[in-house]
Image 1 (tube, rainbow, N blue to C red):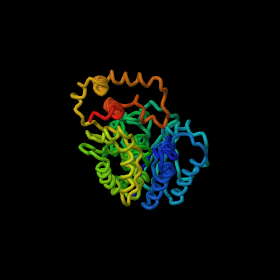
Image 2: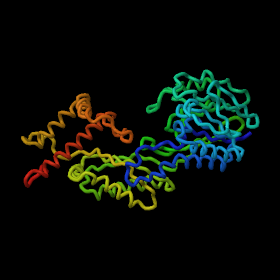
Image 3: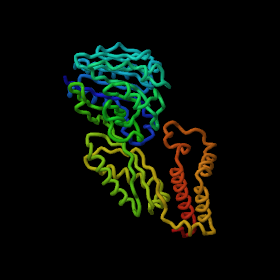
Image 4: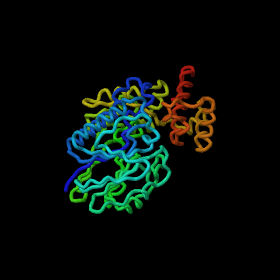
Length: 424
């Protein structure tokens, strides 16, 4: 007996991408529609591959719907699967837990949402398979759910559907914690996990344990290909398991070494080469790129004298990439000045005083952070759209980079104000 199934998770349909309006020229509609288009691609794949089952391991939604349109769109896609004879199994996770979604729509025949009150098993004798699962009743589930999962059915390919953080993953709340050993001891053949947005094959076999990652990256922290697992089972054993990319917007975070580059044209040329290689791997997607320009370069001074020069050069370079759809989400600078800091620090003027102050602040991580926080106290909380750039969340290296930018700006200003001279 042979059948195929798709395992996906963390669809976050209509996830609100806050702050996009702050980006001039951002492809806002394409970005906001990406989660829907990725789900359509998932359904298309299931129909084209004639799979028997689609397993969705939680967080279908990002929280309660703003209106019924989100639920109706998802229901429409489930109807497409049902009409193709494909059964769907869903567990609810922390974002779409029983307590989170208040609006209700008629159920779709052939779509089974596991109970949040108890663990369940659905036997599929026509496939020689069984699916076990349990939904989250509330957003926070601190207990291990695995001991409550049913025993495997004899003579079946047993699949466990579970939303969990396992032993913990960076950036993800510790919900339904458990261990790979506990999953293995259950005696199932495959554990379809959700919650972690980065794809991870936790265990290759006996059982195969997989986080497929989210279906569509939603910001610059969710980089790389996103999609689902396509698994083929023959005579009760996995014969094929592959990742299929379904994202319509692919996020990248790239480092651009400006070491030794004196002009923006050389920097732009370097980015064009890098950007072309990124886009070549998937030309049918929008590539959203966060660029970090780093290294010791005279461009440090160029940017200080005319802020925005480097970002504009990168954006112009993106326009020049032929046959690729590239949008620069942001350009961040981690440049260092090639000046002789020791010599400049000896100067008995404002320039030397600035360099000595930055060196003193940078000497100790804790003191540097305390000084930065003290300067921020009067500003109050940043808008939600700038949370990713909040200096309070930065590591010491990032804070030093910001101090370097501030130093360059002050030195450039001092040089421009000095009668007939500068510090170059």
